[in-house]
Length: 330
Length: 281
Image 1 (cartoon, each protein chain N blue to C red):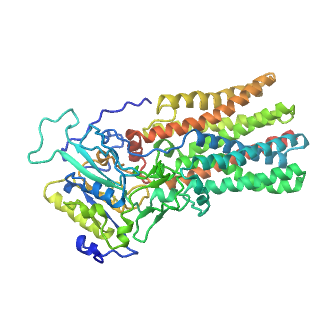
Image 2: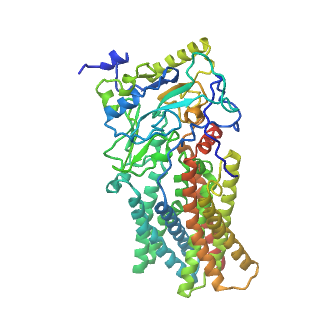
Image 3: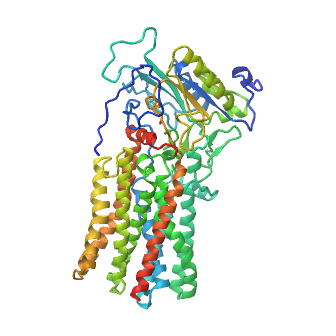
């Protein structure tokens, strides 16, 4: 849907009685096209955090699954997954603290726990993920297999939170583009996180010359990107049903990034490439490595474009006021 | 200082444990902006500059970190089919409305705040504690009315405190005290709501059929699980004309569906991973 801004026009006081139950699609007269909401200040830094959080959480989950269900030939995946999880431990907290406007008071996040705030929930998810991932990696380095098996379980549970809580963070706001699609955004983020983790593990395995787990990781990346694709379709449907713009159409720059990066590199390329191999294409290592890189780039592009598009939608009164008409108490 | 001065100026004794708020009656607003000025003076808020917007007589544009009262000026120049050629005699063709933080019953900014800097006071108002806020900025997109904002100089979130310091001293908030037409009335929320309903029927009797309340229970503004708004309004045009959402919603209602759905997807993919690893073994 393309957005045409209606000209500024204030209502003539016909003294018509205001009917709160009027048709939802009745035209909206804005206040001289002034923004009705304030946008978030989140940009590249937070997009990078969401990407890294999803990647490391997904890697920890895959490593745990490989450790519990896999055989000896999957030990490489377990080791590399635990290492990739450390990205979130070492880069996650600094990125978030850097994004605060009074970073010297970051510890106030730990004063309280508020279950209505995904930012507060996420603080504890990231803290426990960091603690248990660090313990698991240390045990792995020291060769204490039993200890690592024990600490990986809480790390994996927190890792599941890392792949998806950031979608709740965005959706539990009044920003129309994010608030309109709580479930589909969660599906997109969880799928993209798993896809990125599987792609990174596959890439790391090939670099190490260990391709024993490659078919499993490719199958997993296929399932993850399919989940993400379903989420993207559901989000688009939901936005259309509410009469507001989706991430592909809210403005040109973020729309192009969403369509080419998130949908193209993040879902279309891997779906075609992995499905092609599954159907019986010849194994081409370069193609699989390129696909893995595309999945990673697409995962970052998804977060960057959804953040930018949401901020844009918050600035447009036609979007926020339309959303606030449709979002009735049900 | 006069003890319990609010008894003299607003007819209300301010006591902890009761709910206080504003009833802003837009039919009484003359657009003098005394509330904006009184607010800035009492709260020591900086000026916003001297630029002219050219869009109406409104050069303040909206609420911000340094503007906690904002008078909107809506010119009724169009009847939907272009410029109006006739206007009602002896009527101002302007709608004026002094906007402010709504101090929601279920405040999304407070529910979003991860540090507890935003809290509910003993007067049932919502205030940012400046010594705790760490500038995470999550309250900013959480607010369905676009009220709270970060100040980039001090790195903290700011909004109307309903003059928390004045209430503690038994004083009526600065904007309400300065309002020369009593368009802004301060008092106990229950009593203000009663007074507001009475004013609406009074206006209906006078022929102003368009008058209605925004933010009292079961009215526009008090939707989506927000409960009522402690600072509510009497309006005569659609809420959107005043830059107010018709049916705002409580952001935290979306945490449950989103988190459970996302975790279920993650669990499903983790099980798929385990199944694939087990199958290849």
